[in-house]
Length: 170
Image 1 (tube, helix red, strand yellow):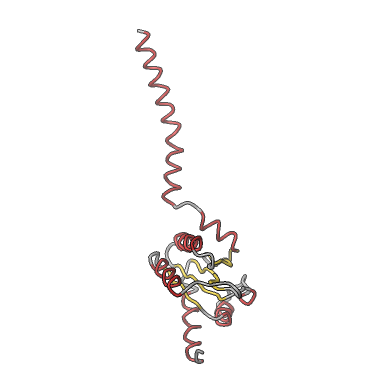
Image 2: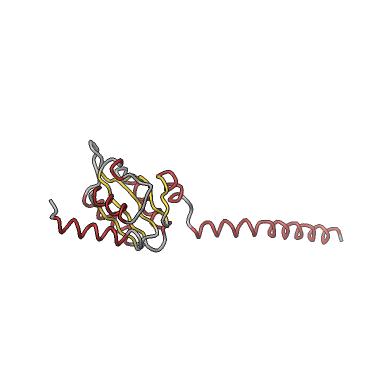
């Protein structure tokens, strides 16, 4: 059991991370009657998140609730969330954090999402999953360039075929 001093430190840590994060994802990794994430899987999750400049923190619901109220973040009822609660804090690219969490959750079914604060506004679990399932920025740009190039390529093929027909007709 943590002492009052340790709990205050943890509360201060949570309060310091929430405003500086572009995304704060609320997850559960263990529910009553279900097998949760093992220590090795939890370490793997934290390692995966560190690769995208993010962090995963497990805290008591009461501390998370206090931090959210003190920072005036509304939209989530911490005590209504089932199971143990973990928070993923993302700094630079919230899309990369969402993608890493989603990829990890596909392999580890114990990790589930409740929602997230994305740049200060709360999104529910369904909206978070939409963000996480989106293709990467590079893929979207490549698709856009392909769509832009297609009409020009088609026009060039038509001109080439017309030139071949004229050359064979002469």
